[in-house]
Length: 137
Length: 457
Image: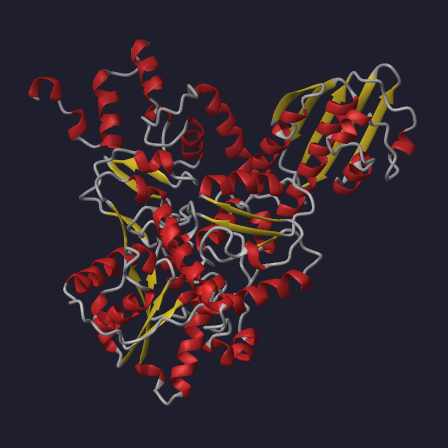
């Protein structure tokens, strides 16, 4: 099963649409509620990242009976140093974004803590692709 | 319809129901369908919130209650009266007068439900302190909310505070007190006047409990009639038989929105009422979108218990009367004319030690099948069906939305041809005759509605 969502740069007001749909789908599949929560938190975080730092992008969700995999692809500035970005508290967020309560440097570490598998590909000036997987069993 | 997890107090009188579908459109958990011209309830989805009762134009939705005469099975007949009950009556009828009249109509003892509210609040605060690893903690005061979380937000079940509701604490207290005074247990009957259907369901099949703490439940509207009839036939020099003194000012307003929240010391807590508001908020809580939340007081009815489906007056008027009573008591407390610690504190220790309820389990209504591969097949089918349906949620198929119809079809409870647009389409292609589509509609909306009434009426 496959679905796609579009996220628009700066549109924080609509953050959470994709994660809500993912949540409903996982509930219907009788996935353990803690797993649902982990995926929803991770997707929401990644959505906000794409809105805040990466000129928006697309979300691709694939679900089968064993796992859910979510890819968030943007055409943003790219991540300079992935290892550094994975550290808690590291942030490149602008003051405007921080004012809204985002950009505490918890995004990527939080995603990593919540998913079973995380894969980040990034190229400066081209964009970033984050793939995250939660296994059902 | 079948396989119900819960006892339900809300029922539909099939003779009165004419299948108008208002309840189906209003139900917050999409628990109602129309079949054969009558509303049917999916038992596993119903949370007894009473929204269907409120909108039913024909009085077909009713709340099953115990027979009043059952009180005479006991020689000691206690009535548990919620503080919103005196709020049903005009300001010149005092709480003491209502207590006295309840004794006149057959009870031997009256106690107000919220007598244990301060102890309940003490227990809640204690639990919040102990469980600082779990956030937010959610009040279990409103039984419709407990069921809502079980069926729709199973991930939040562990956030529910497993403490007995004031009605159970107070029932246990009065029972113990009467036994201690020498009355044999089997002679004591405790009857609760309920403002809503959910409280009946909760006392008939308590969540996380083996046995109910009360012996019967009486609907507030029925009791209102009985008490008002007595009041109307009471003359001016009526002498009060008792003085209402179970509640301090905080107890009086406990069942109203904010009644619980204001009594705990949490940094960040919310009091939210009305079931759709609660659902909207819990959706966000479930996603961790609201940070550092400590405590949630959630109530299914607007204004809290004054908005219960079995209350009589307007909820804002009831709210105002209850507030007024609380203000008067608070004034007397300030002047030192009454104490804030009531008789129930003699049993404080005992109540504190017997306050926990058993584990509250998730009972998700969302799950399509326990076997994930079957659930996955059904879900794939739902997505396919959704794409075929018009997405205008007209409800002519007998389901509240196109999505709900798709789910019903995937679970073999409905058929794609139930959709009136699909029927038109098939007719146009000459794959379905006009008679066939009329037959389908008759199965959903009943025979009469599709009789040739243009000519006959």
